Length: 178
Image 1 (cartoon, rainbow, N blue to C red):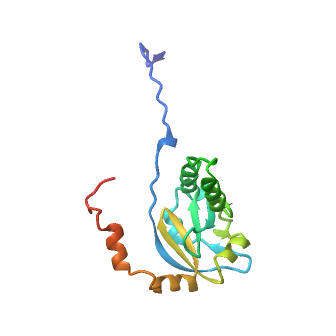
Image 2: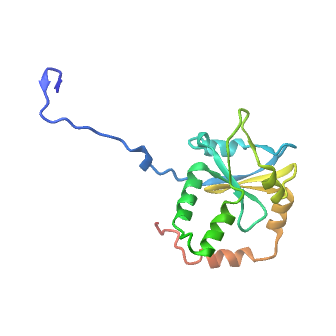
Image 3: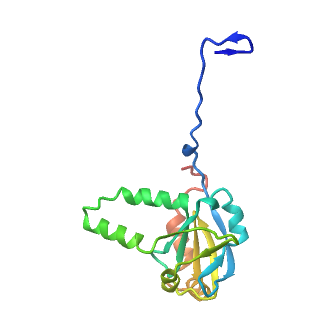
């Protein structure tokens, strides 16, 4: 190969593999929002800004496992969850049941031209969503709550938050690395 009048003895071909780049997200924020009669909600600007690099890929919305709310996963995060599920042996009945129950209701959704998400009717009924809702950035996912259920969860005396924090986080050093 000739370049600038000199012949190169060796040529090197570099390929960049962007699929190996891992984007870590940590969504934060609590937003009061409204859902219209058709089940559309506006994704809050604070979350849109945090998701700038991912919003074009879309989302998957599903029921939460533990609480009466919905979970909105950016597509990249849903792919991680799906990868974990794919490691389960479906020939074990409990695994197959869990996968079926977990995926039941999971629905891909995208932002429309005005920045709204259309929540499937069966899902917003399951989470008792009404006009007034809370949209919460919670790590790698977004939770969508009815305002009533969210306030009840916060006021719940089911557990003492201080004791829970000590039990869950007490053995983790603030300086600990992954």
